[in-house]
Image (cartoon, rainbow, N blue to C red):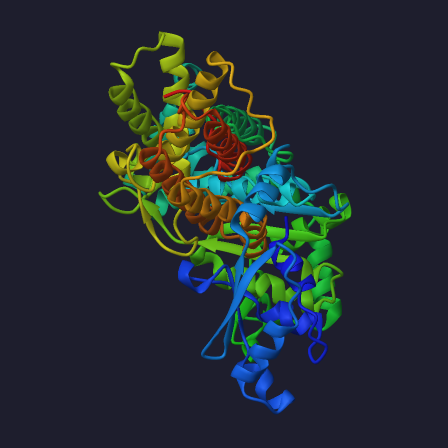
Length: 563
């Protein structure tokens, strides 16, 4: 229900356009200043009158038909006080059928995230890109987009030369078949520990043979990739994330020559010390190397080839990359190259970059072996949750389900609640707490709503009814405030979508939960001595429940009915 638009319709002031008024009307920050405020200062020069006079004139033009209770002029502001009971009941009625995502807008977005490096463990450095990307994907789906989730896997280059050579030198097939990614990672770590120029030279030879699809080396590489991809899919499945594409860097090994030829024919490229480069210095981006002097391609070359392929395949309206802030320069160069090449998708590209995600022990590095793994963090969260619910009167199956849902959501929300660009530190005690700014707190609020509604059923209380007026003014003010907050939900969701900033929605949902839980403590919801009041309370509970169930999946928080 668009209260601001309804308010605008009650203003019959002919000296200003509806759009001019709409742009300046804002939600009041203080309850004693009304529901909405209109600052009139910017109109003074045009209308040749003081802000106070203009505010008075607008006030006198108002239609007072029950929607607006009163209006006050204060220091050049016109404050609007809405009729709380009238608006509250209208809002309750509009929320009765729950909340639904936007209809399809026939637009397509491709989101490149996770970008798992195969032949290595998934460490928690992958968690930010994976969960931020998934949440952004859900926000886009909520706005009616067709979303294609792309996992641009790292399956190319020198690391795989190292991996295959390590297997040939120290490994055996039985150990890899038995232990899978554990054995593959151990071999890679051993190579890194013993790395010297001789080993690197051998790894480069193997890497070149992989590129050339050598009949002896390439099948080993494919075998390692198959095992690694299967492991990555297993882990992602645990957190409920499924990709539409697993095309990796190697998919574009034979598609880079057209990119190189286009750079040359465009006049952008030039040869420098045997390498093909594009000088982007005039854009403060330095030099972009397209092809090394030995003929090898680079990330930017493969990304240009991948972009062409994706646009031809998906005809996207937007292409979003979710990677760490350290890759900003790379994507600035990539986007500028697309612009200079006059690509039809040059203005459709966006880099959603983020800060580091780590444990209190420090940053993550896969070369350190089994440190700070993706699954270790998930296991730590689940273990802490199991400790917290061990004495709950629940079946083993119920506890197992809660452990998975709460643990996974806690790790996800610890990233999504913080501004994307900021660094985050995962602290399992804080992330899994029922108190504070956590997903368990949000899940507990939902479970509380479910419990109240289930109890209402046992008392045969029908909440779908005509609502009586509330006599308790304090309780009503809280209800009214909650309903107004819920009414801002779609605006908040759109802002999170538009800015690709999940923390906007996270802060909103936390504030809503805090306000509801305060209301729950302050009043007796199931007051069987006053059924009319209870019915309105329960309708509010149902509305909060529907709102939470609508928003939580957007933040990758699993729904729970009990805790």
